[in-house]
Every structure is written in structure tokens, then in C-alpha cells.
Image (cartoon, rainbow over all chains, first blue to last red; front, side, top):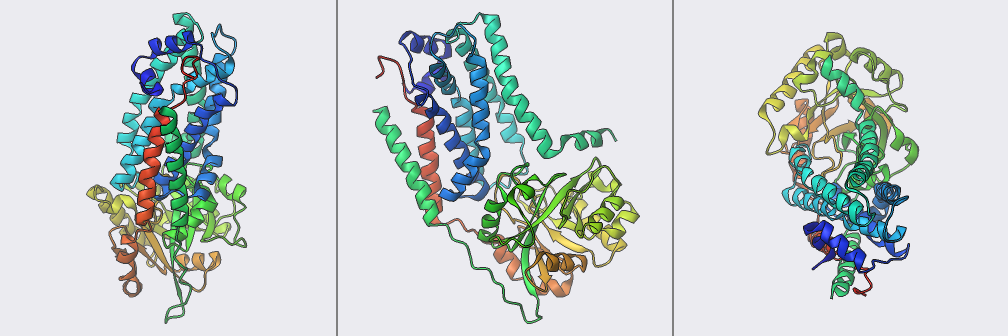
Length: 191
Length: 301
């Protein structure tokens, strides 16, 4: 079965299988999956924003939005360091990025849906609500990763899962709040 | 087998990008003055950019604007001009389309496009004071998406000094628009016109992430293709708003001059058949790349 789909279907069992079979990848090899995420991000943003993809647009957008992938690599390293992991750091990071599949597939689905529908982007309820699916699925995958690959106790796995999501979402939400100027809008709700 | 699929996916993705690049076409800018000696320029005065809550940086926006038949775009991020600074946007610098620095004054009770200002306008002040600050910087003040939620901030003093009102927006013309919203915006424009006859009718896309840029646009009757001329035309009310449905709002004598162009521009789609095929291939290859990552177990090798 395809590795990402296999993991999404049975996270704990799949991680255990891979770790027992000796998952080993070089630091360079561990960058493959983050690169795929970056390529996916730049391509889907280009298509949603303009309806087409060109080399110039792709290069520009991977420079602009690549920081999101870097953020996830940093969050992954933060969570895998100082643990009883059963594989090396690079291998652990690679295994963590297999768990990116729910979000990658969601982003692809949203891009296909908005492009096919000719959506003008001002009704955001549907995409926002559907985010719950990859969000919840990722929590399950992360927990399984921490339990199996990092050999954490259940409690420690919960803590590391929360820490990982706190880093990614915390920084993301701070940046988004600044971009939309959340503070004046909040004041406006109470005036 | 998975390796072959993965390699094929990369090849198809690359081919899709190459095909999209080769089929990228930008219409030539129609820069000749009309019989009245004016340039009828198409502008979008409310566009968000990266970094900010927009998908594209200024350089990509300039290209996309030309692709969509726009001559000018105002960069209006919320209370900041980081993208303007980083891209070095200035009246002297030439882009494919004219990029006008600005910001969207995002205050608790109102939003306002400050177009042509070299620095962000402080947001924590009443509308009339914000408009005065915009004018002091040489810009024009446009009431952004003036639905009823924002009316309270626009008292008589504010309406008397505004330069323009967004009367055409994607929300007022898309298939799933709310009629109530359209009526609110129309009512606001009537109030503004009563306070200041000749106030500019503005069409804007409020573009963030999802195409198309310039879905609603403004035709500006300017003396030349420059920021100064465009701002002067807005101040003088020489504008016609064009919505995505091909409808125009503005002075009757100016509407006549663009009533054929507006529906044509609204229906125009720069996406070619090659683009569509390239997009389908890109989506398909990305799906394959996501699910066919390498397995690095000793047994899997």
C-alpha cells in the first residue's frame, strides 16, 4: 500500500512496522518530503490566485510561502530532539513529514474545488469548516509518531503533540492576526 | 513501481509548469487617448499583497494585473505597507502595471482604502480625521465595502470629505451574492452622493488569495498613465465602477463611453486551453507526489 495512505489508515501500526524494519534516511533524503510540501504549496497558491502556473510564479511563491515549510521543519526538530527516539534525527523528521498527508490532500482538494467552481473567495465557511478533518487526523498521526518513533509514554506523547501544534499554529495565528489586523476588529466587536 | 509513478509525477508536474509558462500571454496595454483626449484606464483600488494577507507579492500582482487587462493596482494591506517597502514600489519605478502604494485603514468601525499614500495612515481615529490624514499625504480616501455594519462611522462630516465609495465589489455581483448586501452598498453610495455630489464610484476586487484580480474594477478617465493623474481623476469623480456582471455605476456621460467595454472585460478570461490542461496535469501530479513518498526501510530498498 502507498506509504502515506497506509499511515493515515493505521498510524500506530504503520509507524511500528517502519521503525522495526529500520527506517533510515540521510539528512538530504529527509528533505524530500518537505520539498514536496513546498512544491504543493507554491503550485496550489499560484493556481488558486491566478488560474495558471508558470515557472516565474512558482519560483516567486516558493520564496514567499516556503517559510511555512521551514516552520514545520523547525517544529518537527523541536519535538524530536531530546527524546528516546528509535531512529536518527533525519529519519525521525522524514517519518514526521509522512504525517503531512492529511493537510497536503486537504490543500489540494481546496485548490481543485475553488478552481473548478470559479469561486471568488469571499465565502470562506466551507474551506474553514473542512479544516477540522486534517487538523484532527494530524493530531492522531502526531500522537502515534510520538508514542512509536520517539518511544514516549502516552502522557509525554500528548505533551509533544500539543507542543508541535502550538509552535506551528501559534506562529501561524500570530502572523495571520497581524496580517488581517485582528486587534482593531476585536475592538470593533465591543464598540 | 512506486518509484516509476513518482518519477512520472515529477515529469508531468514539470511539463505542466513549462506549458503554463509558454502559454502565458499578457495583452498589450491600450495607451492611446480617446477622442476626448483622456486615457480610460482600468484600475483595481483594493488589492492585498504578500507579505500581508495577500497571496502574491507586488511583482506577481503587476503581471497578473496586466494579464487581466488592468493598467493600475493599489496595494492596500491592513494598516501596513511592508510589501510596498520590500518591493521598492514608487511612482518612478516601472512595472508591467502601475503599482500605487496605499493601505487599507482597518479601524474598529470602518475600513477605508487609502490610495496613493507613501506611509500607513493611523487607524485609531474617526473617519473624517483619517481622510484628512490621507489627503495630507497626497492620497485619496475610498470607503471600502460599506455595508450597514460600517455606516455608523460615516457621519455627515466624513461623507463630505470622502473621495470615493466602493459601489461594485465581488459580493455585490457574484451568483451567490446577498441582495441585502448589494442594497446596503447602493444606499450608502446614495447617502455619499447626497453629501458630496460627484463622489467617485469605485469598483474593486478586494483581492486576497483567490482569483480573479480585477473582477470588479474602476475605469478612470485620466490625463495620462501616472499615479498623479489617476488620483486627480478620482478626486474629480471621473470614474465608472464596473462589476463582475458587466454593470456600470457612475456619471451617465462617462458610463456611455465604457458601457461596451465593461461586459467585455467582465467576461474576459486569460486562461487558455493550454493553461487548463497544465492545471489538470499539475493537480494530478501533485496528488501522486503526495501519496507516493519513498519508503526508507531496509526491506523496502
